[in-house]
Image (spheres, rainbow over the protein chains, first blue to last red):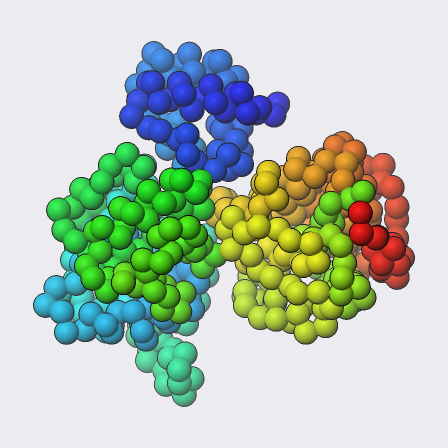
Length: 279
Length: 187
C-alpha cells in the first residue's frame, strides 16, 4: 500500500491534535516512507493507526519515536572531525568554559566522539556538554553509552583516523588505546563508554520544532548533524534562527556533510571549511 | 520527451559508468542521477575518480539541491538519495536498505514517482538485488527500463534479478547504452 498525500496530511493533522508534535514541516518523502514502515510493522492502516493513537497516549509517543530517524555513528565522516580538531575547537582553547550542544543527538555516539576529542586536546574538564533529542528511547541509549560492538566495527576505523592519526602530518601517530575511553567485550558483543564520559553530559528530551533553548546557556558550538535534512525550508530557517540566537558571537555550528544553510540565515554565518561561524 | 536518466550499479559497474560518462556530449540535455554502491572504506575520492574522465560535471549533491540538466548527481557515501517533487535532491541517513546506503531501489522509486513516463532507468553490473525493484517501479510508472547485457557484466546478480522482475525495454551492452544516450536530443 502506498501512502497518499491525503493520508499523510490526515496523519500529521491528527498527530498535531493528539499531541504537541507538529510534523507538518517535515520533508514529505522521508515522512511518507517512515509512516509506511510503521503501518507495515503494526500491520494496520492509516485509519487503524490513528484510532489506536486516539485511545492510547503512550502509543502516540511510540509512533513518534518510530517515525523519527535515529542513525548515528562514532566519528562519522572523519574529515569533519579533522576540521573540528584543527580549526574549530582550537578557537575555544583559552576559554574558561566551553559550552557545546548536540541538537538531535540520537543514540549519542557523536556526543562521546566529541568528549573523546576534547579529552585528547586537553579541553575536556572545561567543557560543558548538552545533548537533546525528541526520542526518549534513543536518549536512554545515549545516557548509558553502551553500543553493539560487531555492528559498529567501522567505529574503530574512524577512531584511528581521528584520534590516532594526524591528517596534517601522516608521520605522526599517537597510539591511544581504546580502553582509555571504552571497554570492548567481544563475548557480550558490546562496547561500554568509560564512566567519566557517561557521567558528563546533560541529556534532555527536546523538540527542535516546538521548543526553544531548554538549557539556559548560550553555546560556543552547536552540533546538529543530519537532522535538518528531514525538515523543509521553512522549518530549517526556524531552527537556524534558534541556533543563531543561542550561539555566542563567533560561536560555531556544524551540520552534516551534505547539509547547508540556504536562505536568509546564510548571510549571518561565515564558512569555516565545512562548518559555520556566527558573524 | 524525457526528463532524466537514472543509473544504478554495484560490483563491476565502475568502468562501465566511467565509459558512459566520458562519452556523454558536453551539452547533454538531461540530468543524470547516479546511485552506485561503493566499498565501505572507499568513502572519498569516488566523485573525483569519476570526474576525471566525465565530459559532464559530476556532483555529490547537498540536501535539497536543485537538479539541473547536463550534470551527473552521484549519491553521496552513507546517504540515501531521494528525488523530490520540484526537481530537488533529498538526502537521508535512514537505515540501509538491501544492506545498502545509498540504496538504488530508493533512488529509482522516488525518481519514478517524480518523472513518471519521462524517466530512463538503467541497471548495470552488480552483486546485489538492490535496484531490481526500483527498475520495476520505473516501468510501472511508464518510464523506460534498460538493463546492461548480463553477458557483458562482471557480476550478473543485479541484472538477472532485474530481468526476472521486469519486462524491460532494452538489453544493451555498454556501447549500445552510450549510443542510445548520445541520441537524446534537446526537448
